[in-house]
Image (tube, rainbow over all chains, first blue to last red; front, side):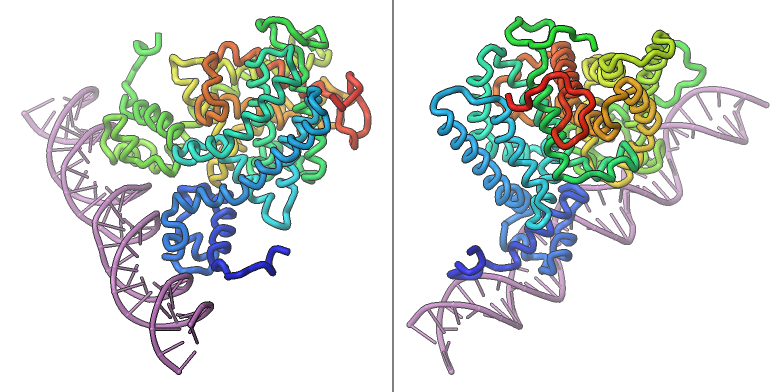
Length: 232
Length: 232
DNA sequence: GTATGCTTCAAACGATTGTTTGAAATACGG
DNA sequence: CCGTATTTCAAACAATCGTTTGAAGCATAC
């Protein structure tokens, strides 16, 4: 269905470069990955990157774009479907969380088409400061974040928006870190033999849902807050 | 009390280089920060880095070491005090969480002595792949992580250790991300005017405690799990 | 005052960086 | 089969990288 449609073969070299760059960026980062390393791994000529993409920075953007737009499109599609089914009623927070982070975890569990590699790159880059990458990611995320924040606001009308914002932030942190760090920073040596991505999903979901539903911090105006004691 | 004790002045240049490097690493990352940028900002000669530290990699390690050992020492001191007070009884999980992440947040809130800058660097580097930095951090964290994991295991005897391990991982992710990303990746444009670090602490604590206390994921053997429904 | 050890300095080192060039090779439409 | 794009190639470009060098500066001790 995908490889038989070609009216023209859009340069196999281009895709090989993207795959090689993706993998090397995960291993060494952007700056530490040279164009010679990429073209070497892709079995392409050094000049091929500038020919196909224009510059190294443009290549970096394309590495993100080709997968991130697909991921965010799926996120929006799932959210659309949820809102259709709800027919105007506010969504359950757990459904919204699943639509946003579950899709990411599914992609992270895909080891066949390189989704795993990419998600590790994305998770790591989320906290990366490089100016133009930051700007690019912000643009790429803008629509999706706006939609999901709106859904959260409607689903949690009693929680101050600022609080929802922060908790969304925290959820992104836990997710990014667990995807990016699964086998990079081995702080807990020898204990992650059970790093099966299929098991990561329910584990992380329990955690971030627990965080989302936690009683509000003391200084905030009370609104939700199920459990009382903040001292155990 | 600190500047008057000097039996010998240990080269003011050395500290200026460390401060400059710390700040530049946060802004641009390790690879993208050149030695000329560092010495330029520190008002030092280019050769000063190799003279005082030996190499750029050694400088990077020293930037982490001088603050991280202090942080981890304080973490262990707080934990020691808690265990002394408990006199053999298991600690409250919230106390352990506070001993580990609260100390980090306090350092992140310190804008006077550069703790804020450093914690942003640390949070970002936690997911950084560079081989020797990873190895260095793993060694630097080994003792502290072992102690705190042991404390968690004793405090949560009914929770499978593997589950505790993962949730510690998730807590680190949420913390690192919220510290490093507060003003770097602005996914939620214009909404973080209230990025007061003093308010970050109770917010984050509520979240990660909620995650730690969340009901265990479905596949895991039941053990704790306060709230029942995993579907709202 | 002279000698000694630590620090700073300008200059240069070879290596590697991203990018450009112009010709050779290949594929495609007539 | 020819002519025209498209893609690949080896080679070189200037710029910047981390590091080294040897002399100059400077303090302290004899």
